[in-house]
Image (cartoon, rainbow over all chains, first blue to last red):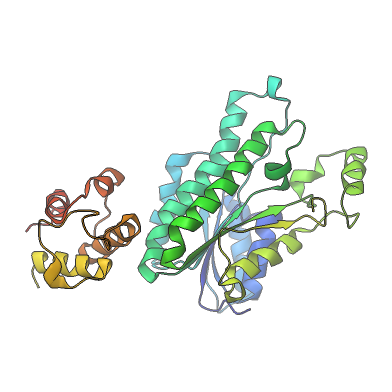
Length: 249
Length: 79
């Protein structure tokens, strides 16, 4: 898959699945706009990528997607960098704050909804400008197995990720006539900092429910993202790919 | 090309109709070509051709060619 000359924007680019997605696109020739809260990590990543892939362009843009008013600043910065095109938008940034509903604080609910779904909606809305101009574009939204199946202590997180699925399906219908693909990915249990907080007993219990009897890797999710962004999936829209090792079939 | 000609041309290209069929009286959804999907394309083409960023309220409000002229005047585009 060749992404030479393509511009890809990835949110939540500094760690976990987002970082794996960035590395995968870089390997395949993309220019990448890296978005994350952590500008220091992002700047280091940009330098690392630039030294490894000197002919490609990498841009780091700091933004806390929980603060929705800040989202327009991403596109203002892109303009400042003279980026006038975008081929692929990957809405990966996500926050999971576990709690039984009775104890879940409103502030945490708001952070999850803002980051997981509202920022996804606003990023899509702002990116449309680029895609409409070319009558071509590719949007990939990261949902979660929890958004489909639910989990104890994750009712609000689950609701925010289920919203990603509904949004993706509806938007794909709106944009199909304009040759814009909109799909989602629901990762299952993936080894990242988000899942490292589980104790061994919980991890073992989860893994026993996975067909492959192992956690997935961020790279395996990134491969699915790359496929959805490529010409190989040109006739695929409104679809959700479950990358969960057979946890749900 | 003056602004009126550019606006008519923009409408014609976005809606994929003959420029001769564009007039100030043309209204949103009065022809099959100007539906909600084409409206997205139209707004985008207007933004590119006139180098403006149209506010969401104005996107919703742009219900005719005449209205488009009125809205664009807010962005210092005169007809």
